[in-house]
Image (tube, rainbow, N blue to C red; front, top):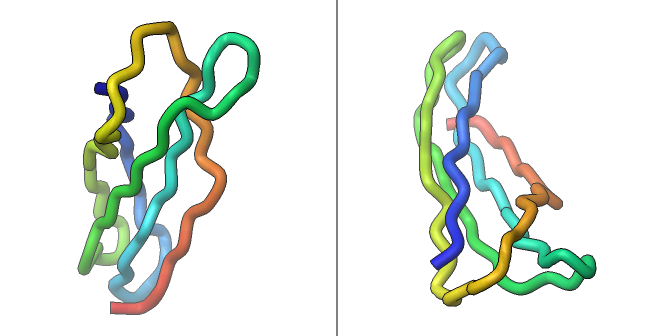
Length: 74
C-alpha cells in the first residue's frame, strides 16, 4: 500500500494541530490513491513525524503530492 513519511516543523509561537492530505500520482499523472495524516498539539519549535497510509494497493511507482495542509490552534 502506498504511504508517505511526513515531517512537520511548527514555527508558530502557540501550539497547533495539522491535517495533511497526500495524493499518490502514477507515471501518467493520474491520482491512484490518497491518504491523510494528522498531528496534534505540536508545541512551538517542535518537530513531528507521521506516516500517511493509503488503503489502496498500488503496483507502479508513484510521486507524492500534498494538495492541502490545514493548521489550526490547539
